[in-house]
Image (tube, rainbow, N blue to C red; front, side, top):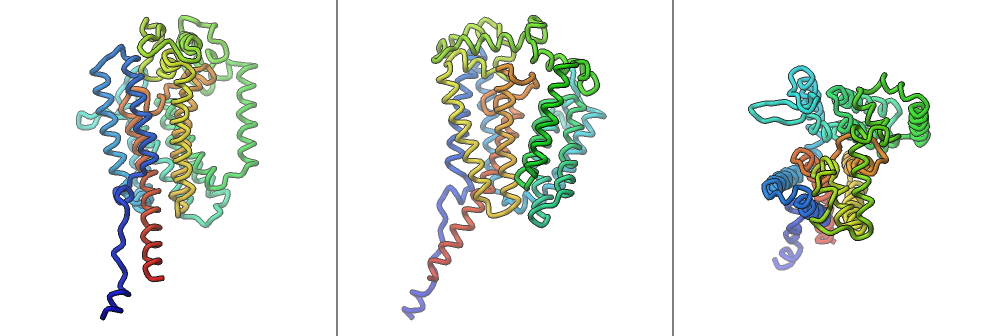
Length: 390
């Protein structure tokens, strides 16, 4: 009797955080960056408590969505990916037919009194669909599989560009392309794409009028402003010029929190949204930028670690894609604020004011946590069961 009792396996227990499907390092980095963003937003908004309260509520809603998605196993996310993708395409088509206009663009839908951008849904639907499609094919995937995934990416990207919303179209395209990269996109093809891009940029520099074929007039002005902001200093070049002044005047340690002149004298446009990076540089200088960038690097490295540790092809493809899309948010925003890239209206992730982008980004982190914690839980349980019978 005693021998049988001793031979019985003990109850397997899993630590609290994995059982709640929370990745503590990733959550810590996210919360620190959000707190940093609230502090900067307080200055950028001229100490507007109502705006801070709204942003705090946006963060709370986004965290709730993140925790909810973290509870869904990756296998279920993979199963719903096609339906999620199809729903996104239907909503994008509906925008072109009956979308609500705002700031010269038709990007929103109003359903039941709720106004939202379907393109935000597609930022998640595209990498989920591409990862699910490629993970279901024999590995390594063949060239025509990559072609199909590329087409799956370009269809919603084209619909978004039609609205027009070039910034979101870039993010959606990047989400799909990164999935292809992790699935085994040939380096030869990558080099070819880079060569074509360089050739395209060179052509624009030689003959700017060629942009009329591909871009709307305001988008063309943004590209030409990137080349020479002083060409229209009070018009299209105003944003970049004022942003450059703010960034340059901050120096190493900045002018002090709440003491930015470009911000508080209303020279800097969109200071609480797209150009909040310039506020950071002016008020807390290069030192503050370095601290913020270290937080971003930590989050990105943690996301890539989660992707590489996944025990499924779907988890690796989706986790890697979502992490690098977060990196593209950072790259495009800092690039446009510093005058390296055209102004395309991409917010600084988790720092700029706005609910839609924060919810989308947090939802992606929820999927990352699901990929990691479900993998870790299954490994922990399996190892404990094995050790109990050894």
